[in-house]
Length: 256
Image: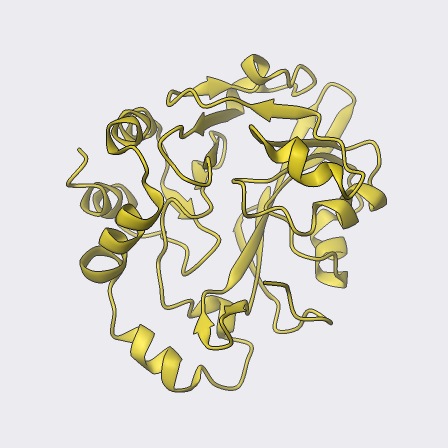
């Protein structure tokens, strides 16, 4: 799997004045259209304003514009699969700290990338300070949950100020309408995917394919449900902004 080069069809979504997502087409197997998305969160650090980048896409002019000239403080790989563009971002922002799940350091070592913070799986809400992020000025704005029961060791981020929850593969919300909105057509596959609903069709598959320990997943989901999110951003599929908590509970109803 790889991103198309050059990266085209980028769609910007401003969720709040300090939270921006950039989505783009991302196809696997030559025909399955999942879409991809990076999330840029602007925050206050002890050294001044900066940026937290989650699941970065290959760097583009759109990324540069979204950053608004602010320094990148953290680059986060939200699970063991979403790290392909980290090396490029680290080279552009060498002072940024790389954050990821346990084992990411071994994966990136061959690329010469040092993972500064490797998060063990706790299945509970963790503060930025607990993970060693001592330079976040408004530390209560960031919380994290690492899922030990997820095959890709999912690392979810909650930004309290914007009430935005960011996940990678924990939730899919296909078809990826927004991520393909700048392209001419979704084709036949896009039409077929458009007839599927996340609640009825895809979530059971994801649960079976990526949930290696449902009891551990249940613990993490219950911890996540205590957070006050009003928006869920996922890497694959449309952002959930309406009736978000109700949809969250419906997705995970068999676990909760």
